[in-house]
Image 1 (cartoon, rainbow, N blue to C red):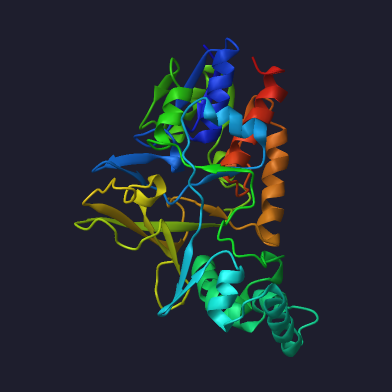
Image 2: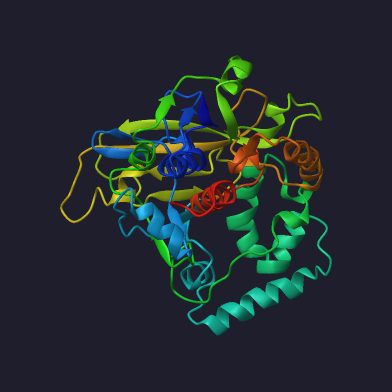
Length: 373
């Protein structure tokens, strides 16, 4: 008899398993995939750590979370500085003085502020009725048309004028020449990839891969006093209220016989006519093409947003009013399950960055087991 059956060997499940095991609990971790680490799984290809399920950059201002993950890997000093490509024009992200200088030829923050204010005033939008109007009322038409519109429409699978305004509550505009995408105090990528982190968390813990919880549900439940479930909450309850909606992703990865394909880890393609949202060149996450450390090959991944259907991999919860209301019904059911803990992005139907997942898992452990050992 196990104290905890943990369904899902991703980051939430691994943190909970690690802490529960340290506290003397007997733990079984299962995952339907053939590997641990969930969507942060990285695989080495020609000496390059490939992010199999999209780019993952660890960033946080939570010192305790940063120190916690440092136990399991050494992190480099990677700073996320994506480039946006609109047709043949290249812009720095997030929107900053480098962006504005390239777009309008301005040189000072005052000039940039005045141009944005002029465009907002010219648009004359006082009560935005959709995402398009909301974005224009925040940053003006030029930035919206070139850097927001097409990318957002690809991401959501709907025209911006058909999307609700609340999806974009704010758009970060920085009047400094700084391309650091995140404002967090701590940022980096583990040297040697993310998979090692989860493997170290799960050392000494029984893990069964290629194991589908729903294929042997009753037998697995009978083996544990309590379950930590990190899969889709609606699936756990057999979709009794209907399906929650997600957006999915499709990846096309290829190995190229060149040492440097695009010169940056992430290049966003913001025009609608190009079907992928970005190209990731994995070697740049670990400085694999700099300082004389030249690898003659590179690996790139094109990322395509996709509509989600049952059976597809769910990536982004569609946290609009309709789906949030549906989730509340499932959450009420979950609260009645005294032997099941629902956690993570799918169990809580909420998009989490990695640091949020770690924080939520540690919070869950403290609520369940008291102070961490």
